[in-house]
Image (cartoon, rainbow, N blue to C red; front, side, top):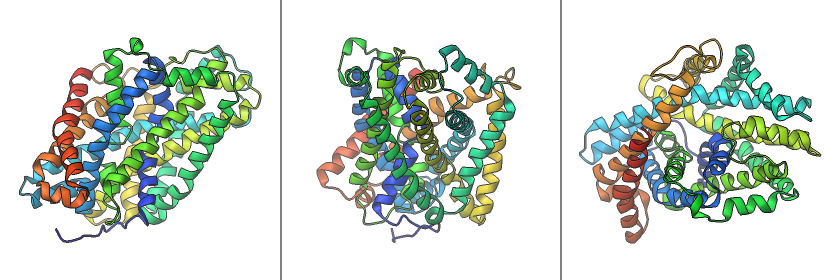
Length: 448
């Protein structure tokens, strides 16, 4: 295939791509979800299984997405069609890209609502409203937020505008410029919080909790959760990594780049655990508090500590930045496709999509108040879209991408793009053909 260039631009360097893709991967899944699922599933043994799953499920599929995107230099639907056609396969493979882009749009609609909660908590922490708060008061504060559609709409709208502003500016002037600022800031804040956590009485207990491998605490359900999260944490199955890969410099090694992204994403998740659990243990709280860990347990903990207001504020800023970088990547594949398909300007494509997704988000935030009686298959709008994307669309996308990249595309084209040794390529192809899709399929079927 003749070397192509994306009409949307390209990353200035391999490291910008690593930071952008890591920004996509590092989101609420790492900072909100990973600590509480680690807490619910027994700690260290769960972490070990999660790391094994990253190696044998996440990394092979991520390599597949990146190489398809870079080879075609187009948005996911067009990239899959182009690469399929080159190998003499059906252009119907482009439907995987359509499903992935729809998943990204659906995820953004409820992701923006949760990010809105985070913005509210940044404001609450900054004002000192959570200082000295009790567990009951923290629960009432969070439930009061969910029951207030006006406040939810305000923050959902603010977050949507933040994302639209960056994506509309383009790959270089928007996403790349934002990445250069936000990702270093995210790492600095995370290290400051880790330093603070290390000074607390609960750090040793937290270290043991996360890295002592007690397999008696590991259930089969925990293995499934680890496998599922290892896949979702890397932003796979929704076209994001394929779109970002299309802007990747030709000379950059896909294998080492993907390993760097996976390593950074995993390090952030582990450091977040080491920053959060000491605070939980120091205050005698339950690490298995579930989704309420971030919005109920942590505000109580920060509210009781010396300097807690400042560090609590820093923590929620960290979560907000992570949510912002991830949400940008959720919109990019569809915006790129609208530009390619209809010849729209980038601003028109971004604003049009942004308004549609914002409107869908109103139904999601209404799930907790004025639309709480509206259900789809027994679930409110928020829970339905979460279930549809996490349990059906993303796993199917991952399975099909693995099958496409390792079965439908001719080996010589894949090897030409991935540029690794014969042994490394054979290993990648074997894992992507037989292990990764089977593992994701198991999670898919059992989660149904």
